[in-house]
Amino acid sequence: RSTFDEPWFGHRRGLPVEAALAALGTLVLVARTVGGRRSGQLVSAEAVVGVWALALAVGSGLNLGIDWDRYYLPTAAVGLVLSGMGAAALVDAGRRMLSR
Image (cartoon, rainbow, N blue to C red):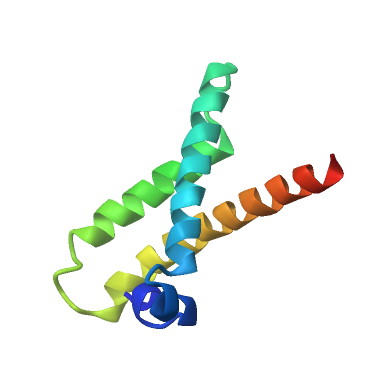
């Protein structure tokens, strides 16, 4: 809700940076989870974060018809974690490019 209404970049360009970073973070989370399973790990930290994000998104999503702030807070936490993962992936990619 606030991700699409408040950021200055979202108003100027039409896409909030947080949403793009969260989408990238989701892709990174899925890739790391699948990669961990292929390497033989039973449960990785990324898998735990993925289950947490999915549980919060589904559990809160069922109640989003009620416009109470307490139902938006868990989805904001998921968005922040995924945005952070996306930003970290961009920083890591930038470091790799600069070190070559």
